[in-house]
Amino acid sequence: MYISAFLFAGFVCLICQIVFDNSKLTPGHITSSVTVIGAILSFLGIYDDIVSKCGAGATVLIANFGHMLYSAGIKGYEEAGFLGIFSELLCSSGIAIVSVIVLSFVFTLIFKARD
Amino acid sequence: MNKEEYSKLVKKYSPKEPKLRNAIIAFLAGGTVGLIGEVIVNILMKSFGLARVDSYAWLAFILILFATFMTAIGKFDNLVVKLKCGLIIPTTGFAHSVQSAALDYKKDGLINGIGANIFKLAGSVILYGIVSAFFLVLIKVIIYG
Image 1 (cartoon, rainbow over the protein chains, first blue to last red):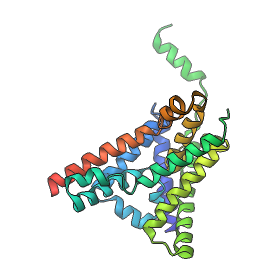
Image 2 (image 1 turned 30 degrees about the vertical axis):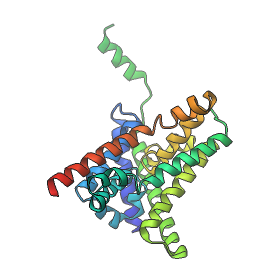
Image 3 (image 1 turned 45 degrees about the vertical axis):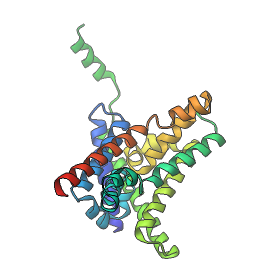
């Protein structure tokens, strides 16, 4: 598990670095595409297998954000129908959004910008 | 001098990016983040008795806490410049972009500065993540029931 976590996370970063160096895309383009690719892989049912094989190597990546959104949406539909997609979509990825907002707001009030 | 000659000249004198070295650094850095994540997940599972899924959620929180704090004290930018995609593609890059945008616009005040700009860089990840996930769920539901 440790080896596959290292290899998978490293491999994704390697591909992104190669794309980044050989195109004019900004980091914003790349992270957004990786998120969408994560959602697509989850749609194809591949990402669950990757998580079960590579463990945290797959969940530390931003692609996992797309995967969490998609799987929470499916779960919401199964529980509450069409409305469930809207109410449950942010369910499991909420931890990333809420913690990043709260922590960065608190730290921004405490610390000053540096050059 | 026409445009083509000029662009050739610019190419000749602009410093060459060491692409192979960048790729290897990104591989090692990204792999290390994954490895550390796996170690943290195992520690959480063994010492706190958490389920694997909950450990992944705690791991995301820990990584975000680490990245926002290091960015706030000014240590993370050098790391990102050195390790490039190795830190941008993991969740740390997401947290770093939110934190650095918030710090940069702090001088413009709470509403027009922090409030308006906190998702300046990371907003695209949230937007396209949610939109793509929503439509993929719709497709899945409509086609496969």
